[in-house]
Amino acid sequence: MEKEQRLSWQDYFMANAELISKRSTCDRAFVGAVLVKNNRIIATGYNGGVSATENCNEVGHKMEDGHCIRTVHAEMNALIQCAKEGISTNHTEIYVTHFPCINCTKALLQAGVCKITYKTAYRQHDFAIALLEKKNVPYFQHDVPKILLGEDQSF
Image (cartoon, rainbow, N blue to C red; front, side):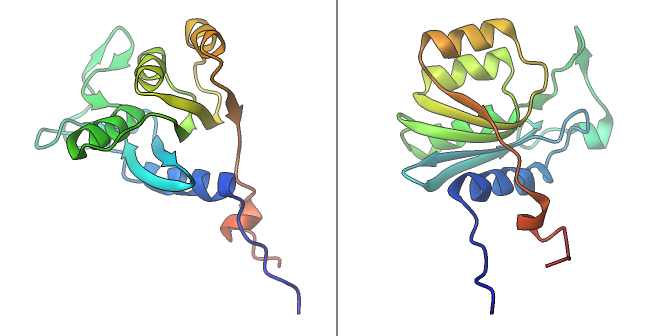
């Protein structure tokens, strides 16, 4: 009998980010984020409106300068969840389905995130990359192999 393949930590956390993205309420980008400390998930977030207010999927987008301003980004929602619960984000990693925007990058750096793993290189901002490099915060693109998610039924 062939030994079952166990997910790597990277695959495990990115698969969780992909699953969490399915809760997004802004269809411009279904984004999921997972904050991790010592290989433990401490918070998650997805794109969505401010709690107890209307969401894009209910009333449409609120566009300004090419951005939907109704939506709180997944990374920010994960950080805010930690703030509300009193959980330190210092020395954490984040796994996110899309490369963080400039504002999320700044917030992640201020919050002490020390590594960013993303799936999709979406609108990578030059200044965000410059800040990551100046702060020596590594950022990696990583996709979970479909076979590990059970999407390929050939094994």
